[in-house]
Image (tube, rainbow, N blue to C red; front, side):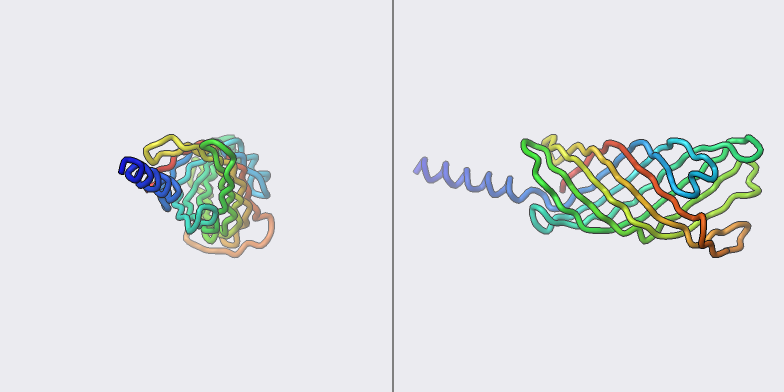
Length: 194
């Protein structure tokens, strides 16, 4: 009887471990290294990167992810005043997970950025503009289990996109050249599996 109870407890614990929570919510912060036409035109410096993510696993290896992120960098405008450029995005895509041994895994997350916004905020406010476009995000997370549903994530993401419209003083204009924006983000985050 003791052996039977032991085997049942073992089977339950193995099943519970194998069927780890299928959904997670993540928060991340890091450094943003901007590039592309826009970053070159105004000499954007290293900025801050923030992100919120939601993931769902269909199997141990395959899942989907939805992300909301932003990055901001300061620069000096033509008058020598401090200005800022901020980019925000909303993306969705598949997720593939590789086990790396121990408590580590690697999430590979290629995503389509269906909303890429940009805000150029200058000190005087005379030339403020809002941009909109699309792009692609190649996300990578190296994840380590911390217990109790929490996980640590080391993120390395690359976003590349372009803006197709700009709004200045309430008027919208199409843009088709010198409109590329990219960023390499390196950061850390925490996940909660539920």
